[in-house]
Length: 303
Image (cartoon, rainbow, N blue to C red):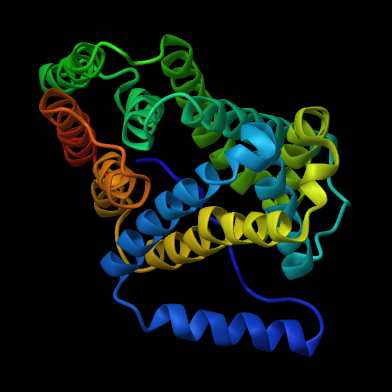
């Protein structure tokens, strides 16, 4: 699937530079395909960990903690420059708002439906971006397969929460916009500046909802520790692994590997959260996985 390239070259004082260099060497020793798979598992385990916070601070409080800590970590790593032209600022702010909205919608969905179903429905966003504008019959087949998967999700068990499904669909629409804005972010900003500042705006989108919903519950020490873990597992670690993998493998191969995400989410939901899916729902998840991998594989070669 489409993704964003960010140059992670270090800048600034020696301790930070050495830390980035050490992390880069450690990650670089892992085979690229394994990096992608570890990134996928990290994201889904982070989502499962986040779901365990819902009883304490709710879905909006959890996403607030995730984005707050992710923004803080990225600001410390990159110490971004705020000297950007008007167009760059417009892209960065739009990117942050979409990222924050995407996370809010996804966590609101996760509060109502199983992890595997939420990720499968959300994955329709990047799949739509991959298929947009294509007139080839094979791509139409992938689209039909994905649509059939969604129908099976709804038919596989009668108690799927419609509001949760719609939140996951909204998160998918935001994910599609996020991909397009991520490409623009790479064109208009340098190094990690756009990513770090954009994450700040994403956090600003979520904070009012989390503060209104959870208040001082967000400041409990154990909640802060778990929130930091969610940020690391869901944002910092997978971003680092995926960006390093993209240096070594073609984007198309990366996209095919990323297509496994709904299946991994369903497995993590089963193993960590004890969320079992019915047979038809597993078929639905695999339909979206195959459609995504097929659309990526049959895409025109990258220029």
